[in-house]
Length: 301
Image (tube, rainbow, N blue to C red; front, side, top):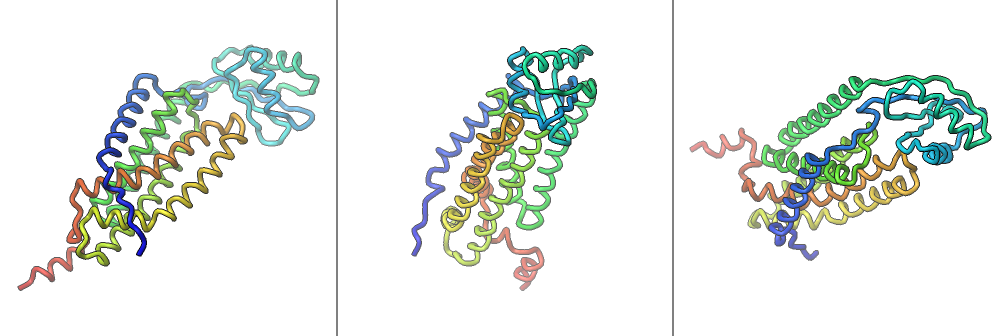
C-alpha cells in the first residue's frame, strides 16, 4: 500500500508561515504600492520605423546610455517598427529620442509619430483590470459552490486571494513594473491555482465514499498524497517553461514571467495548506455532500 504523507500534521506551522507572508505582502502593497507602468499612468508613445529589422535589445541599451532609463522598447507590427514608451508629456521627447539613437547607432530609421496617452486612459485600464480580477474570483466562487459545496468554494476563494495577495506583495516589494502583461499573469494565476485546488478537492470528495471510517484530516492526507505526483508534474513543467521566459524572454516579458513564477509556487502551496485547511476549519463532513433530495428521503419515517 502506498505510504500516506501527513501533510496536515504541520498545518499550524504552515498557517503561521501563510499569515506572516500575507501580512508582509499587504504591508508592502499598502506602504510601497504597486509600481504602475505606462499602461496605467500614461506617457508618451514614440513610433520609429527602421529600414532593417530592429534589434530591440540594442535600442534599449542605447536609450539607457543616453539617459532614458525608463524607456520601454517594444516591437510594433512588423520587425522594422519599434514603439518606445516614455513617462511624461514633453512634446520634444520624440526628437530627443531620435537624436539620441542617431548619435549612438548608424542604423537608419525615421520618426513616424509621437503621441501622448493621458492618465485617464490608464486609470480606466486599472479600474477595468481590478474589476476583471473581482469578476474572476466571483465566477470561481459560483462554479466551485455549484460543482462541489459551499465549504469547498470558501476554501478555493481564500486560496486564490492568498495567491494574488502574495504575488502582488512581492511585485510591490521589488517594485517590478505592473503593466497589462503582469495583470494578464495575475489572471492566469487565478486559473492555474483553481485547477490545482479542484484536483485535490475532487479526490477528497471521492474518498468520502471510499474511506468511510476515516476522519477528515486522514481523508485530506490520503487525497493530497494520491494527487501529489500529478501536482508536482504540473507545477515543475510549468515552472520550467516560465523560467525559460524569465531568463530568456527579455525585459518586456520579465514582469509577466516573474509574476507567473511566484504565482505557480504560491498556487501549489495554497492548494495543499490553505484550501484543505479551510475545509478542516469549516468541519466538512460526508453529510455536507449529500444532495438535499437524498437527505429528505433519509429523514422519512
